[in-house]
Length: 363
Image (cartoon, helix red, strand yellow):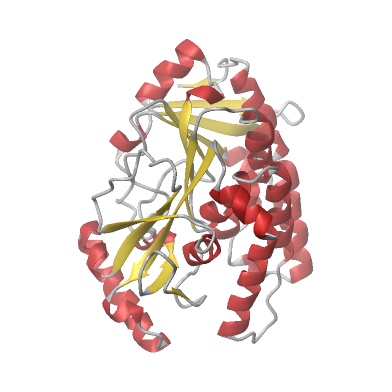
């Protein structure tokens, strides 16, 4: 992983809040030029369900202020929750869209015994907070500067079945094959890169796994975003997305959980993340030895919370999808809201980084 770590302290508690991890090329650039928004060419958004709520205020700041007024293209690449977040950022008022999504996500509730179809329907309703009308869809698809790109996974073979028992068996086979080698994943799922139609992204020609490129348009934006967050055995896959061809499309985190791809050779890559490491795919979560190739992170600036800051959150951890089962809705909504509120400390430390404060270097 990248070679340089900075930690900044929250001035109120003196607890380090933001950890900045920079690859060798990114480090050299920042030490010479500072962190300037115009030097960033790509921004990355990981899968991870509600974990992103710990970054909520940082998200608002980055697109409400840091990138405000930008004139050159910025390519966003996200999967699952990252794709949903980034669909907010490509709108005319990205901070407002991000707040809508965060509030809706925080307050979503699933009643005990809710059916598979009902859970899926709730998720479809959540997208209405991100894209409330056709105007929002047009803003995303036609944004001249902020270019949305997102990942979904088209099921192959037994994983394309509608029968949950067979799908569970298929996922088990996928996990076993993937444990032997990540390239075997391509036999079970095809990566689908939905990309900005008018500006080919620098990561367009991915070849580590079978990859299909599909231009985003007004008729496929919603289904592509829904597919990117459709967790197998939890949510229904999205069938036959316009422009992508026949098939069932699922969570983009299957192929690209935290991303292990060459993002760009030009400029810097900004990666607000909830972990200080990157796991390539969903099936790699249990494989402690499998992490992203450091060469892909040479020009990446990763912004993530410190362990000390996380320890002071409710329950001593960032929000997690398991909270739906281990907490009452009232407690979960409160704790998630508190995590979002405290993420303001990440913004304050980000501003120090912009001002050139490198005094808290963690060797």
